[in-house]
Image 1 (cartoon, rainbow, N blue to C red):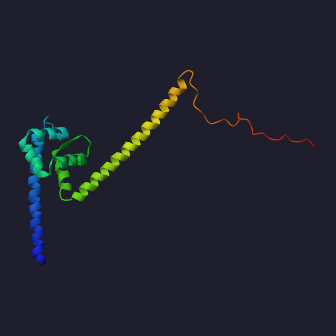
Image 2 (cartoon, one colour):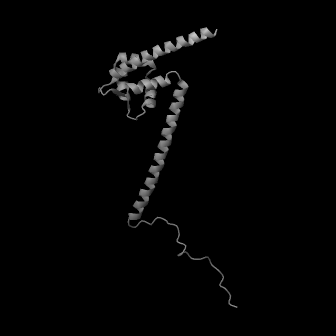
Image 3 (cartoon, one colour):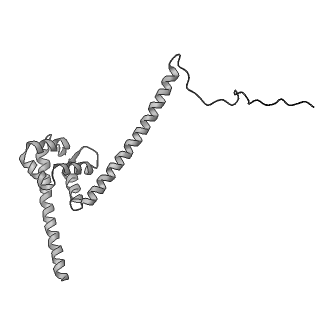
Length: 167
């Protein structure tokens, strides 16, 4: 019946909300226990180090999603590019992706494509700069032939033409 289905959805929502609160508390503990320099945020290095050294951190990480997925999530939700996550960034990122693995994969793919595009633009700009530097270097080295430049039409010989016959 509709009433039963509605109650099931409501019960599932309460369970998910309770589970999310529990996971948020665990994520807060994770940051507190992993934050080696006590700056209120963790780097990936601090996270891996704590995972390797501390059983309770390993337990939290494994319960939430596992180290590899947490490291992937880390890269996705580090929105300010600081290389660290504070409690708010970690919880909001986890909350956004925990129930929607397709969204996680799509977002991860989008971010990878954006990085590739940025890398390609950087490589293109770097190649242009190298060519410019090479041209400058060739122009200042004594005895080096000058780079080819487009021909000047005023100094180029004209194609052979039959002399005009005088009448």
